[in-house]
Length: 328
Image (tube, rainbow, N blue to C red; front, side, top):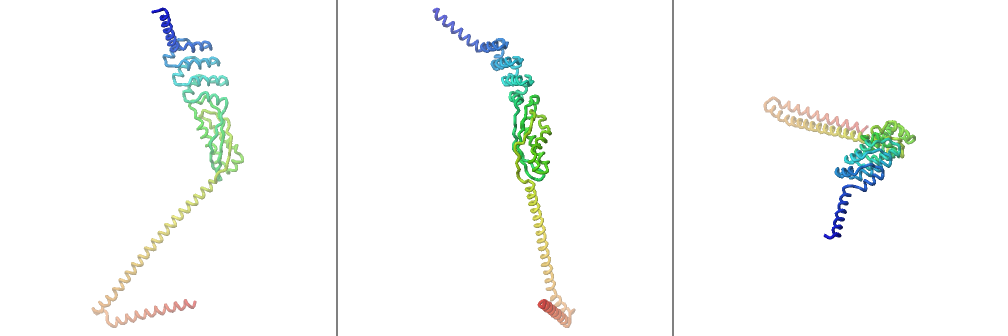
């Protein structure tokens, strides 16, 4: 082999070896760490590769923390990365807390991050409080008038209660409950319109931030409107319901009266049928009495005369009654 080809082949092998070495050993990252004052060995970086840890995800946040004056270790950052946390966000939160003179340890910041909360946003909310606007809350005063209230709640993140503390939804729900209670205890809606600050005072006095991840600084009433007359509407519905009940009971009594009338008519018809049946038996009985000799001809004639006299008296009585009616 010629010397030139041999040198070319040797140079290719050296270049390939250097490329493999640089891909396994992050030399440039090691140099950047040393230049920033972070003492880390090449072996530690190679061990990160073997543990399937991206060295840049650890070294770069470590450089930021060192420059900010934080005392963190590589093992702390690497363990948080292996646990599935966001190392860069935790370091940024620690730096922000350090600048704002807020006491925040790495373990607590890592726990907040692993709990699924944005620890950097929490630190920012501790420095710069956030305003939460509630949806329109409808409440009814004692006089039955609806009052619609919109409140703005100024909250500050409580870092000590971020792990296990309730979120913004709980704050909004508790404030809405306090508004409904305050308006409901008012004698008239005019009292709420004249003094909307009594809602703020009453709600703040309830300690609504207990068990939450926030600290309520103030509750301000943004808007108060008058809604419907709920009391009159309920009374109207109650009167309509009472009317329907009364109509149903009257219909029930009418049906019972009609049924009683029909029953009485049936009884009258039945009695008339019995009378007709009994009257039809009279001629037969008289004929049988004549045949058997129990009734004589003279007795029969006397009976006829009595019947005719009775009918004549009845006719005269009807004529007298009609004559008196005409005179009157």
